[in-house]
Structure formats: C-alpha cells, structure tokens
Image (cartoon, rainbow, N blue to C red; front, side, top):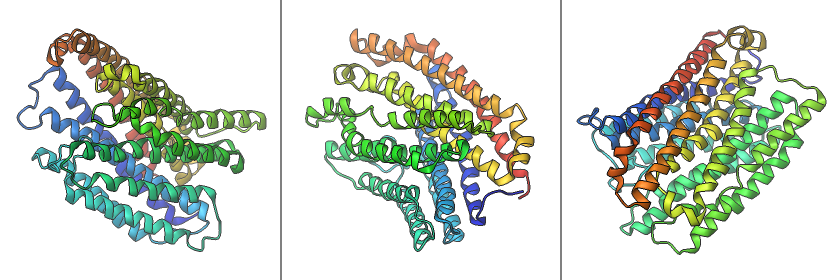
Length: 448
C-alpha cells in the first residue's frame, strides 16, 4: 500500500531511477579511467584518459542533479500540501535534462567540447542551453506549485531560494572570455558555488527532512540549523572560493581568505545529526528504515571527514602550493562528493521507496534482506580504501614531483602499485553499487 500523500509525488521516482542508472555508469567509467593509470595504453585509440575522465565526472554531476530534482519535487509537494502544478512539465524537464547529459557524454567520444578547455564543465553550448531550459522548467513548476499553496513551509522557501541560486550560478560558466584569468575566475563560480554553496544547502535540507521523518523530531528544531547553514554558506561558502584561486593570477589575499573560510559549511549538518539523535534518544523514537538511517549517519560523518578534515587540511595557504592539483585533492573530492551528496541522496531514495511501497512491504523486500547492508558496507569500505590509496599517491607525487623536482611522469613510474590498489578497491565499490541498484529496482517492482 502506498503511503505518500499526493499522487504527483510519484514523478520523483522517475528522477531517482535515472539517477541510479547514471550512478552505475559513472563508477564503470571511473574504473576505466583509473585503469589507464595502471595500463596507459588501455582503450587509448577510442577512449583516451581525457575522455573517460570527463565522462566519469559529468555523469557524477548529472546523476546527483537528477537526485536533487527528484527529492526537491518529493518534498515540495508534501510541504506545500497540494499536488504538483504539472507532472507533464516535470517529465519534459527530465527528458530534456537526460538528453543534454547523454548528448554531452556521447559528444566527448568525438572530442566535441565547448572549445574553451574548461575542466569539469566541458559540455558544448548546445547542451549548456538544454540544461538551462530544463532548470527553468524546474523553477517554473516549483513557483506554480507554491503559488497559493495551503501550507507555507520554511523548507519550501529555502528549496526555492536554493534552486534560484543553483540556476544563477550556472550561468557565469557559459560565456567565453579570451582572458584566461577572467574565464577561470568565473568557471569556479559554477564549480565551487554549486558544490560548496547550493548543493550543500540541498544536503542540509535533505538531512533535516530525513531527521524529521525518521526520528519524529519537531520541524522547528531543525529549522534553526537550516538558517545557521544558510548564514555560513553566505559567510564562508562565498569567501571560501579563494582556495581555488591560487594559480590563476588573482590577488594574493584570496589564498588566505579561502583557507580561513572554506571549512565551516560542513559543521551544521553534523551538529544537526547529533541534535536529532539526542532528541530521538530522549523521546525514545526509533527509526525503522535501517537503510536510510545507516546512509544518513554514515554520510553525515563522512562529509565532515571529506569536507572539513581532508578539504581543510589541503586548502590552507601555506600547504596549498604543494598539494594543489595532486591526488591529495582527488582524495578530498571523492570522499566529500560520496559522503556529503551521494550517501545523503541514497538515504533519501531509500526513505522514498518505503513511502512508495509501505512499511511492511519495504521491510519484507528491502530491510529484511542483506542486500542493503552489503551495498552500504562495500561502498563505504571501498571508498575509504580508495581515499587512502589516493592520499599515499598524493604524498608520493608531492615528494617526487614537487619537492625533488623530478617531474609528473617520473613520479608516476613509482606510483603504479598504488594506482593498482585504487583500481582494485574501485571494484569493491562497484559491487556495493550493484547491490544498491538491484535493491532499488526490486523495490520499484512492487505495484503501487
């Protein structure tokens, strides 16, 4: 028996299904990419390293954005107390966004980029505009749903503001500037403000929402954490941009400003999680959805490690010179993206699956089966092992290439063994993803 209140909430599950499949593809292309460190000639003629890496990173962006859109629609409808304005617009939006993603990824095989050499945002202009159109449809649907909504919810207002900011922060990366400093300055607006501003706000809202639902915590108790996070994003997320500006010719003050202010955003989600657990313990409220609970707690802890500890330790201006752009950076990026975003989105999807199928059906098909636990532990153990391998690789790279001055390729000769460790641990992670994908579609087979 379906337990969500509004029928139009089912539109979110189409977004979740697309995100799950792209997540699996992302990991496969990630394994192809790291294999080329171990065997440099692998797939060189038809998918060289720059292509496989671009696809791996862009799949990450697309599947996470799909999860964000789906979760936003799910929460929006419930908090507004009314059906979605148009499920048709939501489906058109999904089709356009997926078409942009598939088109961009296929185009990389033919080396059809934007011609600007912009790392992480390589999509050609036609796909950029498709993404903008999909995002504007998303915003329009949100606004029309909130118009005259019977329930005024702070969560919905924050979702609206965050969505507007997400769209605005994508636009600076679209124009082309001949001056590289100006171009790269604006490119980081897209990359940094998406990840360390708008996406972190989505993360905070989703964590708070899940704490409210799983632990029966009063909404007002979570609202204060939302406002604290919003303030920290405005105060530190914007100024924290400076840790990306070390190498591109911007004023020197950006380096230490970025160092000081780039580690605070991850604190409120952790504090919010602790506060929710304390309340649940005192009230003796027990969360029955173990998959969502595990991923929620694991993601919150991991995000603090990935964002604050691994991120903050390498962005400090006195060491940034040595660490910037090494595998130490990759370790931070992998841990931060996986824990702060992937884990929280997976937690939300497990929660939404329970709401779709009902508590008893979800318990019989998911909670009582070992698959979700295998997915959780294999992905988390695989990620920790990968991150440790990357940290070792980064230290070797700094020592051989930057301290001893032997060059990047000379360092790689000594790193092959640890790249092989990274490759093997990637399969551990892939096994966890496979369990998760199977779990999702097993739950979706249950008739509404």
